[in-house]
Structures are given as structure tokens and as C-alpha cells.
Image (cartoon, rainbow, N blue to C red; front, side, top):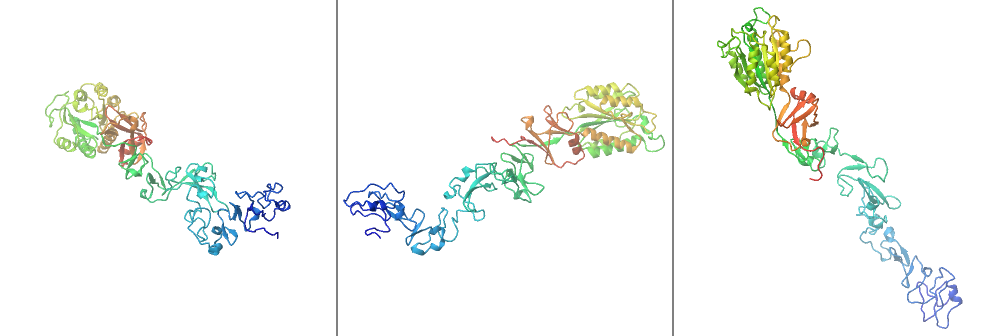
Length: 540
């Protein structure tokens, strides 16, 4: 050992002329005259302060135990501690804790085991996923992972489960408040990190109450985003900005009450003398009695959906004793709601006449009849006759009824079992002119007994019922009107082949095709009209 060299310190004392061990150049040219020699430039790490300046301009070779020269003295680098002259990373090695007077300290988010319990950064790392809960991972990943992975339906987090922390993609879950998340669960199904998490997952559910806001439990028992037309119990079940109307999600609108519009149907019954005979020509029940029974069944079965009225011809009083051979007859009960009892009571006391069959005159009288001039509903005449018109031709009168406004359709029933009294050509012509012709050679309804007469009347009732509904409010625009049958949206069809259409003149919605048939069959449980829009209006 060279005398005068101090071990464990770095730097030199300019007044004593001492040099550090290992600086051969300095020893060879030791300044004994008290002046400062120049810095050694022959070795990169000479281990001495060749110029004894006050800045401590030394290199690290003079320090031991992992220490470095800091401000003129050997010390442990930042993050390490001096344990009996040796620099140790006690926070990464619990065996050092308690030694050299070093005690555990509170855990910090620094990638070290500060409290010496064997876990690094506990409280800052998710114990299940191993991911840091802070975006920047306390510097462990050296970058802000959220900024580094700016993707759809996912975000970055520093993952400490591997040999070294790295930024990992985390797919959004229901409760995540990250900017890229929308309250749903997602998965990275294609394994590509760059495009984020593209597959939306659903939560298992039993009812919609099990789902987050704005979601609905589907038939498979999985929560799915709700949409316009979806089922709901309260507004929050619907998509954002939508509301719940009558159990259906709509877009910032109001439920519209609607009522079916029953048609006016005037029963025009022939009570000429021939109606006293049996349809078969024998001694059975008369056509008059059979017709009265059929009308009773019809009116009782449909009075809640059809506004029935009654006209008898010929004859101007109930018994039929007054009138003329070619007289028009009379409307005794105007079409209206709940008329079944009144009609059947009246017809039960009515009698036949000895006059002819003035069908043309009866229909002509109806051209000026106000009871069939309601433009808000369909207006229909049903003629039941067993014979040829005994006065004028009825076909022009049927045509005139059809052409007037509002238009009147005329149905014709020929009630003649023997076929000897009616004129098929006349009845076919009436059906054609009235807009009610059936397919085939016999275009009117032919009845020859009680059963076929009842079936004819029921078929006509089904035809005239239609599917018209008057709205209680006027839609602001046609495009804002949404219609649902049993929670299913029904599209508008201006061609009237299916779906529905709206008439602004009457403020009515009319259904066509399968939708109308379902209504007529009584197969519809819920019919809902909503002012809404097909997609949420984000601006509201």
C-alpha cells in the first residue's frame, strides 16, 4: 500500500498533495511543489481526481460496495441503501429488512417491495389481473399506457405479471369509467391489440331488472342494448334519450290512444209476400222467420264492432200494412252503437206485406239518407231479398250509392232455396256495381237455408269490419308515427298490401294484409301507437 492514500473516500486535498489509489499517472508525476497537476487523459477511469477542484470531479473506481462518487463522497446510487458499506436494494429483497438498522417503510408505487412483505406495489396493483390501477403505473412501464393504447372499447394498463412490466390491453367492462367504455362488456376476440375490443358481450339475466340501465334481457337470457320498439317497464329500460310508452320504448314522444272505427251497416230486408214461404218450397220454417233469427245472431255477435241499422221494404209501418206496390219502404232504426236489442225487438214485432219487391226504390231512397253519410267511417248496405225486383232496375241505384261521397258499398244476399224467384243476373250486377262481387259465376252471396244465410251474414261482417283506428291526437309528422302490434314494430305500406297507412283527412290508421287479419281474428293483445322516431335523437 502507498503511504498517505485514503480508502473509502473520493476526491483529493489540494493542500496535502495526496492522490487516490490506482492513478498511476498521478503517482509517477506526483506534484511535490504544491501545484495542481493536469487531469489524466490517458485512462478513461483512473480512479483519482487529477485536479483537486472543489467540484469533486472524481470517477467511481475509488468507491467500493457498489457506491459511486456523489458530491465528493462515495455513496449508494438513488434507490439503494448502504448496508455496512454495501449498496443493497432492500426494498426488492426482504432478507435485508431489519439489517444494518434498515426498517420497512410504507409501500410506495415504485416497483419495489417497500414494506418488505414479499409483495411489490400492493395497493396499486389489481391482485387478480396483476395490472396497475394507475394509467402511468407509477413509472413502471415508463409510459402512460392509456395514451399508448388509445383504442375502441378498451384501454391500456401496465401489466406486472411478466418478467418486466409492459402496457397491456384491457377490454371494457360494465362498470369501467374510462373514456372508451360505454357500460358494456367487450372482448378482444380477434387477438389484435391495435383495433381494441370489438366483440360486445352480454350479461346473463333472468329479467330486465338484472340488466344495467338502457339494456333489456333477451329470450336467451342475455342483457342486450334496448332500442326503439323494445319492451320496457320504466324509462331507464330504454336506450338513452328514449322513453317508455305503454311498455314499449319510443323516442321522446307520447303514446297515442286510438279507438277502432266501427262501420255503419244498414240491413235492408225484403218483407214481400214471397218471404212467407220456406226456402225449400215445402212446409218448413219461412224465409222471413229464418232471416229474423239470422239478423238477431249477427247483431248480437258484432254490435260492439259494427253500428247496425234496419230498413224494411216495402211498407212504411212496423206491421207492413201501409205502403205502396213500388214504395221505398223505410229505415226504422238508424245505424248506431249497441243497436242489437232495438233491432231485434222491432223486427220481432214486424210483419210481412202484400206488396211487391221494390228493391230499386228502396235503394234510391238511401241516396239522400244522412245515416250513411259519415265520412269518418265505412258505410255499407246489406240487401237480403228472395225475388226479382218488381219495379225498376236496382243496378243503377247501387252504382249511384257507390259513386257518391262518402261511397257506399252494397252487399247482396239472394235468399231463394229453390232458385225460382231470384234473377242471378240482376243480383250479380248489383254485386258488381256495389264493389262486393265474389269470385266465380255467382258473385253475390247465395243462401238457401238458415245455415248458409248465417254464414253469408258473418262473412259480410268480417269484410266490413276492416281495420280502421282513429287516433286521439294528430301526429306532428307522418314519419314520427310508430305502430306496434304485440310489441313488434309494423311498417307503413302506402301500397296497402300489408302493414298500415295513415289518412290525415280522418286522422285514422288502417291496417292491411296479415296485420289486419290478426286484428280481425282477435289474435292481437296489444296495439300501440307512438309519436316517436326510428333512432334516438342524440341532441335531445
